[in-house]
Structures are given as C-alpha cells and as structure tokens.
Length: 261
Image (cartoon, rainbow, N blue to C red; front, top):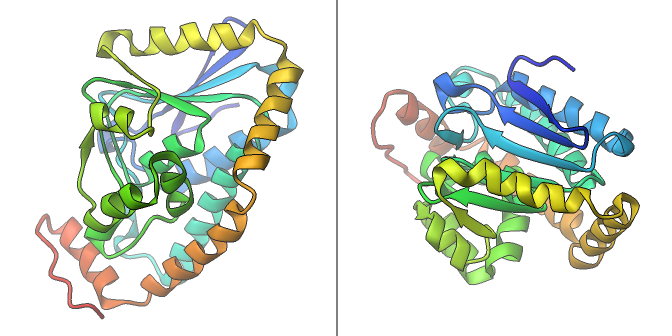
C-alpha cells in the first residue's frame, strides 16, 4: 500500500512500522493523513493474519502535533465535520483492529497525536517526549476519543486537569500517570519497542487477538456511547466565535482572546 503521509516498513515478516510522515509540519494530521489512516486500519482489520504486531511512530523529532490547523483556516463547517467523521472512522477502526498496536513516541504528541497514542494498546516514549491534550487553547476540544481514553488511562480528575488547562507534561509524568508504559533513551526507543513486539510475535497470535478483544470489551463497554456525547459537544464548538478566534490566533502566531461565545 502506497501513501503520501504514511511511511510503511515491514520489519521481519510479522511487524509493520507505521511512520506519520509529514515532518515539515510536525506530522500534523491533515485530510490526506486522516483518509490514509482510515484506509490502512480498515485493511489491517480485515487482514489480521498478515501481521502479529504494529508499531506507530513519527518522522523526525516529533510524534504528531495534532490536527493541521493551517489546513482548517478557511474550510467550511461542513468540511470540518467531514474531517471529523473520517477521523472517527480511523480511530474506531484502529481500536477494532485485532493486531496489537504499540505507539513509539519519539517526540511531542499534542491533541490528536496524544489521542492516537491513547487509542493504541500501549506506548513507550523517549525521555525527551512531551505531551498535551491542548485543544482547549484553540477554542475546540478532543475529537478523537480523547475524553473517553484519557480518563481511562490516568483517572478522571487528572484527565480533567490536563484537558481543562491544555498544559504540556513530560514523559516522566506520563509514565507515572499511566499514559505510557515505559520511558526509553531516545536512541533506544525503537529498539526497545521492537524487542517487545518480537516477544508478542513469539506468542500465539490467535490467543493474543482474543485476549485483546476480551480486554477491550470488558474495560470499555460504554466507549462508543461516550463518544456520541463527545461528538455532539465537539459539533457545538464549531459554531462558536471562540473556535474561529482560536484558529485565527494560531495562524497569526498570537495568543487567542476568547469571549465565551
């Protein structure tokens, strides 16, 4: 499969490394990347026998800066909602993929980048990685299951603090809060992730798939229901002046002035 925004590398015969590949813009998620992620996860979901583990990382020194807000500067609300629909399909299909998915967080992971990490089965991060659920700073909110996955990872009160403030946090904090599983030296990150992936690949693949399905089913019975609330709340924000101001301020490289409308 050939993509413009994703780089695919087969490691050995059982492991696929997916690299978010827009380093010139910090691997921000644009329309093409949303579509390609959806197509890729849909393929992997239908063909689980081809692989035993998937690793997702970012090109350069960034994992993913979140949504490409420059692309959203002039789009209509209809186009914005269409983007969100594709992203929803991509994340839901990623969750439903029976193959284990590990995030290798090589750098900053903001907004949708953090949501990709939270949607993976678990994550290792470089000691230099930083994180933020930062959408509130630009007049919007998490739109890729962030309000569902973050409290499941770090607890409700911590998730409220992180999403209300939008402030960044370190790999050490992410580890202590349960958002990532391991901190690695930057030059060792991919090697450490591959070591774990190989251990998974050595185990019975059908057993792994059923374990993943059982764990997800029992721990997240209401996640799709909760996401309906998230989507309704997100759509309301699209009609606000603060949303317009947030995107305008981002593109003008200034601090936004929100009026609560």
